[in-house]
Image 1 (tube, protein in one colour):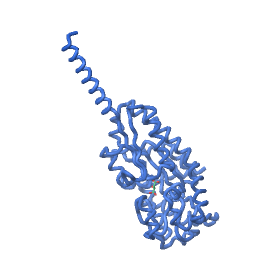
Image 2 (spheres, rainbow, N blue to C red):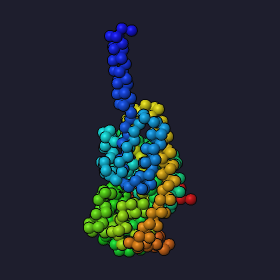
Image 3 (cartoon, rainbow, N blue to C red):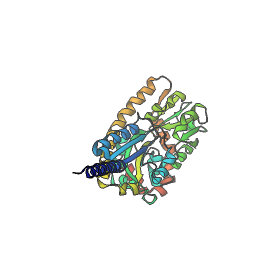
Image 4 (spheres, protein in one colour):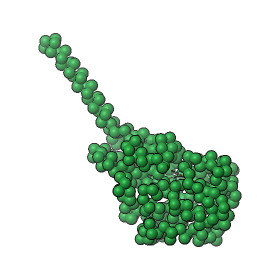
Length: 331
Ligand code: LMR
């Protein structure tokens, strides 16, 4: 080969290799997943597991970046961010979809589920799964339910009877159902971002809050609350959501791989949630920084009776059939 021809060949091979590299770099799907809790929580661990499995299944085709602790977005900002394409996945608590659909308000009804088995039963049912499409008119699709657990009440005074909550200010997630729940016991609900809750409790902007053992532990709410009532009065779980347009537009191989990783992460996180809850509940008790209040059966029933009218308030917008289907899971 003449030297000139050889040079051209080398140059064009280098150019093609360069183009190839550029092509494969741009073909890698960068997937951002934003959430508000600590990594050491059921949602934090499930998100990390999703990253691990997605990258194992799809190799260099994807890079999954997890942003915990509200680093990227608070829950009220994450859904618009998903629609803009700034982030691909979020997993807000089921209490935080009120502006997008009224249907998910079902999960906030007080005392709807007697335990997490009942929650799983409903979420696995056709009725539960149909709610993945509750926001399809807004361009959002649900791709999984992730457990955290049942909520406990905390305050700087002991809450044994519903009347003990009267006049107290409680931080709540952004849910009208939760607002009604606290109003039902004469308390004053205040919607507030998760990331602001610790300091609001510390400075006395609010007197109490409701949350799971995992969030009470990882956010250190127990340091600034003298009493925790083990009320198990409501649920705090999540829906993992993504943009319908983005999801449907993915290369099928990538979409299938992500769907598999999501289903494995869901199982992993949901199996782990109960264990983490028990462990972190014990850590809070062992810290000696707060007092645990266990309700008698009669006290538990009093809370139930006081909060139950909330069901009727919201049955119209949620649908009585859906509520009946969920309640039937309390076997
Ligand atoms: C809260 O705001 O209390 C929770 O929704 C936080 C979370 O994601 O668990």
